[in-house]
Image (tube, rainbow, N blue to C red; front, side):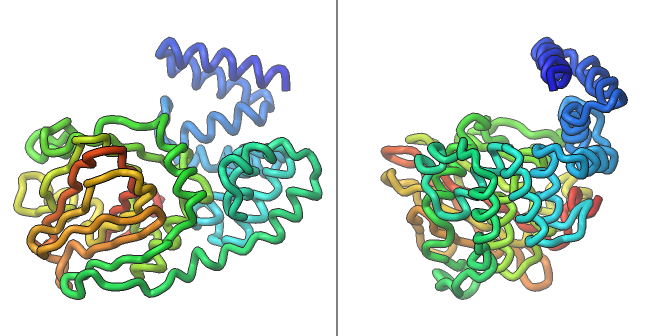
Length: 356
């Protein structure tokens, strides 16, 4: 373990200096020498192309091998694979069993997830993370019931046609708080895609911030959230893009816009060909300690201000797949306080990383 610590220290120094190739070389050398912690770190980098070549299958193979040999961090990643059905057969029961093993072996993020899914508050979770007894974590995992995540209520229609559907108390408040905390250190300026130059840019119509999570940064709780959204709107989870969490400070907004991919704009035909159409947008309101900040639908003639834990989805496309021009909408600026929401785009076919 001391060798692993020293390797990771050297890797961190290389990362800080921008010497990413050297960092990958250090991890590769340690992996070849049998260092399973280094194997896990290298596998996770390759899995998403994080300061490393994008080699997802090779990266997943490394993570799975390390998990099979008892590395708890790798086990937690394999639990994600099992939950969403990539690189492993889809099984939420196997997912929870693997996550429980990671918790029993001391991996704190796995312990945190089990406590949160049991309904513990953030404060309660922080006081119990160091609970040493193996029996405690085994019993916690075995007693966990995640069936409510697969059975949302029917909700109520704010608009029947086009569909805008609301779900009150869609997720627990402790999960809302946790998602906000997970997002704070990842916030970046929210960008708009420039179809002409084919790059993301900062633009005056969108002034808020966004936190995005890749396959390694996501965990079991994130994907259970997607599973519940899938059950609510009736579209398979494999058609969901990576979840984004949006933050609006007072005065920040995203003005009137559409979420569908507009095939009339230049270069968007290739986007449709590659990834399909965005047919549904699913929002989850994570807090309500602000004034203003409504979600506005000007062509439908109403605005909506959600409460903490509430879900809302709207359909961006007509039954034939054509964009629905009635679905113009905006995120209005908070007047006081900050606003946090989950934003989930859903395509009409599996997204790329799910297909690999």
